[in-house]
Structure formats: structure tokens, C-alpha cells
Image 1 (cartoon, rainbow, N blue to C red):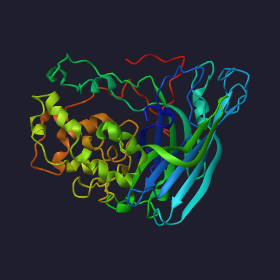
Image 2 (image 1 turned 180 degrees about the vertical axis):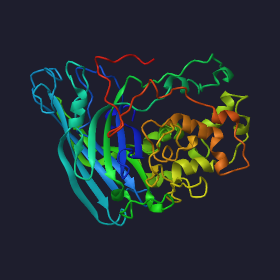
Image 3 (image 1 turned 60 degrees about the horizontal axis):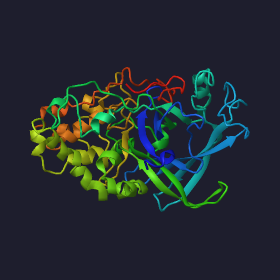
Image 4 (image 1 turned 120 degrees about the horizontal axis):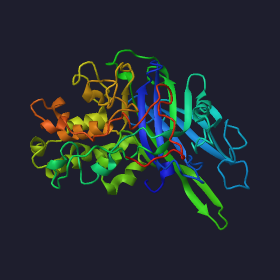
Length: 452
């Protein structure tokens, strides 16, 4: 999928909306590493890709509700190479030469996958905002983005370019697992250095939905009891392409046949870090109900074996932990059952399925903690995922053994498990909005700066 960025699902977010606590916000991102100065051919969704947001509200790993997004691109002036020929001041400005719009369709599965299927177009010809070319081309980008936020009655939708809200020190982590603050204890030691957000100056294309909680719950009502099974949903994203594509001379292209899934994403970093390289493409083509075949990679994660090797004096207890990781299986594949964390559960049942699980009865936190549940904040990851949650640090700490005492109280985690961090705080690196669509306006091509 790294070779097909237009269909590459990069991040999924699901959280109770802090500005509308009777609703849930779902966000899926595509097209990683968008260089804002991308002219003359700026980024956009694929007209040949079917994008979907899936919601499972009964725990079987199959979607009960799906929102589909299909895009159409129109070139208004075929005689110029320019994306825009002057300032863009509205979504129908004649200066904007390459426009995208989309249709949103709600698909409901009644009585499971073998039951009746109903389809309802909930929005049509909805314009996207332009890419943020620069201040001359988009003198008031915030207003353009606001115009592209569409209120469709009981739902709000946005699709377009955003600042990438995911922050990660890719250069350090993938340089043989260089983790802070233990760099000097690595097999190949280095002096401590501040973390670098490798995505700081990149944009992404986002699809965002704000929906009533009652429309997502299998009970059809908004439950206020966190222990109510009907308060939990599973969420994932996917992208699909047509079965066949025929190219001919002259640039003509014909696509035909049913859509076939080519990517998906639920929990952050599941495919990137948990699934081995040879299985990644196969994993991308499956639905979560078949994830039991990948359970071994969760129960015995490769990273948990590597950490004691890379840091011989730092993780002695983790080195001796050979049992299957029931804690990681709960976090990533079943949800956390009742009785493990007081007043909380997001358990969807015994079926192993990679879904981002959200307990919609947990209200938004007044003072969010970026470490989510590990930081004592039940409204954060792995209870859904908010845009600012430090999922990289959370997952590394979990793999390092910080969460294993939840299922094996006699186990003592290494002290390092609660201290490891990627060293990239959100402050000064990523900004967010307080209201929908929560991911901030993108960096403009004129203002882009290299990562620091």
C-alpha cells in the first residue's frame, strides 16, 4: 500500500465529540507525507477509489453500518497547467481550476451480513476545499474549510486536506528501535537528543463524520452506562479499487468489475508494527472478522522480543516474559473486558478483530491526558482514539510490559516500561481545532518548513 498512497489508510480516530457530547466523531486519513509545496499537481482523493468508514456495533467483526465516499474531479479550464489562476475566495470560484466533490452513502446491514441491506444517499455533490497552496492563492483558508464543512441534518461531514495530527519520531524508532530516554543503553549507544516529529510539516487528506451516538448504538439509544455492552462500537477504515483496469494508448483508462478492498486500518500501527511484512498485503484485503489468523503476532509480538536484545540492561523482566500477551490481545483484538479497569470496558466479544473500540458512554475528559488510559484518562486510547493521543508511546509502553499486570497481577514490569517515550510532545509540534473536524488547517505550500 505504500506504493498506492491515494488508497492508503494512514490513521483512524474515534471519540466522543468534546463540543457535542451526544455525538461521536470518526476521522479517517489517506495520502501520507503530503508535501504542502506540491505544485503544480496538488494532492486529492482518488476518483477511482471507494472510501469507507465501517462501524460494528454487535462485536462480530462485520460492519453493521458503513459510510461510503466517492469523489469526482472536474477541470474547469483545460487550457492551463495551473491549479488556480488567481485567489480562491469561494468553493465555486472560477479561479480554482481543479475541484473535487463527493457523495456520501449510508449502508445499513439488517440482521448481519446475510440480512437485508439498505442504501441511502445522505449527501451529494458536496464540495471539498482546495489544497492550501499559499496565502496569495487562498487568502482566507479557514473560511474555505468552514464552507466545506457540511451539515446534513443529524450528521456533519468534511473531506479535504488537513494538517497531519499524527506525531512520531520515525527516524529514531526505525533506526533499530532507538527509544528515549535509553539511547545511551542501546547496543549501539548514542547521546540523548530531543525527539523529532517526522510528520511536522506534512499534510494529509481526511474524511470526518460527526454522528449522533444513538445512530451508532445497536440499541438505538444513547447509553450513559459504561458497562452496557451496547455502548461499545468497533470502527475501521478501508479503501477499495475496481477489479480490473485496462490502459490504452493516448492515456485512456477503463475500470470495471466490483470493488475489491486494497487497504484497511483500525488500531494505530497494527499493520505497520504487528503484522510481518510478507502478510501486510493479505491483511489489507481482509475484513476484521478473519483476524484470528494474525492473533499470534499480537500474543507474541516481535517488538517485545527485540527490546531486551536492543537494550540488554533495561528490560530484564520483559526478557523473561514468555507467556502469550493476553493484555495486548484484549487491547487490540477483543477490547478490554469488565473487571480489569474499574468503571470501564470496551469489550466487543471473544471474536478476534482489529477494530478501534470506543465506549460511547465515557464522556469527554475535562483535562485530556495524551497517554489515554495509561495516563488515567478513560476517554483516550485505547478507548477509541483522539487526535492528540500519543498512541506511539502508549503502544510501546504496552508492548514493553506496562499493561501485562492487568491480566497477570504477579508480573512486575521493568521500570523502563513506564518511562519509555518517543520524546515528541504535541506542544509546539502539532496544533488542533477545538471543534469539528478537529484536525487543524493544513500547512500552506508557501509557508512549509523542513521538519525539525
